Length: 379
Image (cartoon, rainbow, N blue to C red; front, side, top):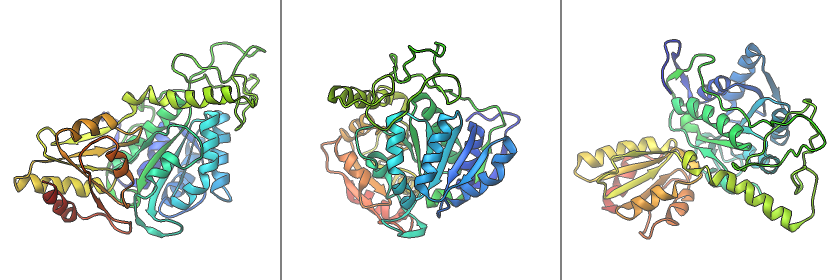
């Protein structure tokens, strides 16, 4: 983000930076249920949203939270929720509804040790595949993995813009390490953040209006409740008029469009950072909090004479398959992550070389020296 004279630098943890990013993006509705380690997001927005004319609602559980966010979005608000692993699981049914009804919103998951209740206060990266396959059916998610409080701010803004542009839920897949880490964050001045609005219909209300008819970009214009348009919204398979259909052909066409609208924009959605990969013989693939340890390990490897680099996944989904394939043709790949190898399986799909894994099941950050030892073994 380009600094402007009216931007401010503030020390804040990742959760607070996420909340401030949401406010800068124009979020005006937060509905959620407290859960460690994401609760600071809710607490901060409970204080701040009334100041900007927004609404904070604590719901009875995560199922209701996701439903409220989706309803608020159809009312015209930029809306979000925040949770951790157990709550993310409970939200999945309504996340699927949001994908199928093309309802823009942002869902933040501050990951902790899991499964089940796991380690509520300790870090993990164990939900990243749930972002891809958590709800039943075919759809293509968009998910980001911040590695710093600054990225918690910036990527939350990006998530809102992408959610509106593509009309679907977008995920911030952070982890307790980054959520509770305090660093200097450049906070953009009010009104200075670029905003991509939802596609809007060109025609006035009338009997011929089709709420789910998409153009060349495969994203239908969106109207909001109360604007005079007839809209019918259902989680059932539906035609362009929004009404249910029991046709297999209609269903196939619909789910293909929902997937294609993301995949055709994949070149703009894929987000990675290359660190010294130009001449690397070994490339560490990492994301989120783990990438901070990997960065130090790569630097130490370089200092010891090993040609090593890192590919940091800023975006998890869509997956950067072309970057992985290109690196895999000339370097050994090593995937470091705070789970038992979830993204490593995806990396393995796009290279013929064996992929070395460095994993921890959750509870603490992978140490740089552990990653460095694996780099030495991979040379």
